[in-house]
Length: 160
Ligand code: RB5
Image (cartoon, rainbow, N blue to C red; front, side, top):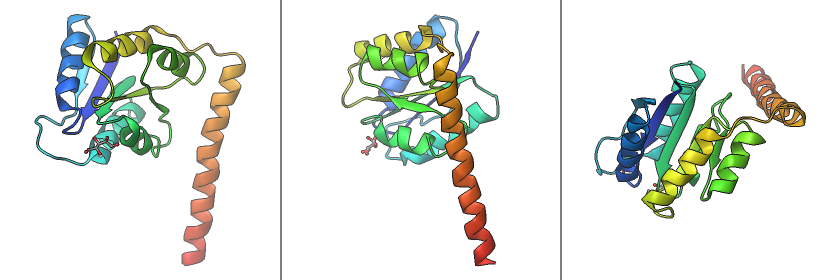
């Protein structure tokens, strides 16, 4: 069974708890990386924790919740190997799996109600990556990460 890392900021905390209960009831192994209250925190810290769980292999998928899902997706996508999709409906959630092989789903607790969020999560978890021509495109996403890495190395070398 797939291990799923969960992360949220204060805005996403109550929805994260609902999603955790829903996933647990369906037998998923859940790795809850916080936050654990509605006290104000910074979403990039939790996006980073979930991203690292993915790239280290501790979890196969990640779910992040903030107010809109946008900040979480932006932060998680900074980590090479992460493909985070901010989704507000089941269709884009399914497409993010079938076409983009998204390994992180970002949800917005201020824009998506609990039941809709569960529908989106269910659609996202059920959809397989379609492969084929989409595999070539996803490989090109990875190539962009390497271009960025090479550019950063050149800048570092100049600074020395
Ligand atoms: C927190 O107020 C809010 O900015 C955050 O949850 C998120 O929506 C950022 O993208």
